[in-house]
Length: 256
Image 1 (cartoon, rainbow, N blue to C red):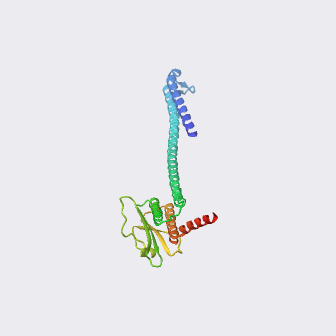
Image 2: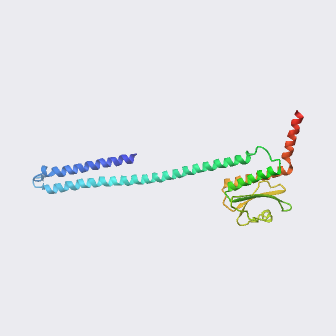
Image 3: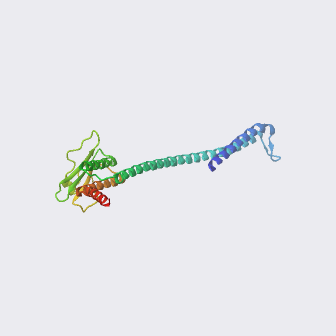
């Protein structure tokens, strides 16, 4: 605001100086006809006086114009700085909105993983459909064309169960990675492993996706899904859902 006021002041002063210069140039020849006597022996000639006054006014105008240009340049730099700051703020605002969108999607995914099941599967068909849905969520979260969740026996090293999901018009390789490589923590090019959290079970559950740089949030969600698959498999293997339903019916019958 101060810069704009100073620029306006320079404009006014510059215009007034030009007006004064024009008035003096017009009226000076009329006012001074025979020269300007300074002393009895020294007289300033009319042409010299006019040239001197014009030179002074031109110097004053030049000083004012230089100051005006400096202020304009300073204003231009401040405007450029403000424009850069505005672009930076808009970029940060856009990143914030993008982050909010990602967080909303992650919250919806978390809700669908942990709160989207209103009943435990009672049959193998229901169980398989539930696990396949979770594997499909892995593929969505990781943004990969395919995803595989494999459960391996720690003792024998054999595959207990394997569930996969593939996008349309994509195919699953016949061999992604062997169980021995997984158990021995050997890296296989082109494959990224995400293991479940529990380490004290008789099985190991691992999610296999094409090698990619998963964001930290996505990796956490994939780990959570892998944990859920392992948990549901343990419950299903133990027959716990069936026992809970049976006990529920028995308690209801007893209460009646």
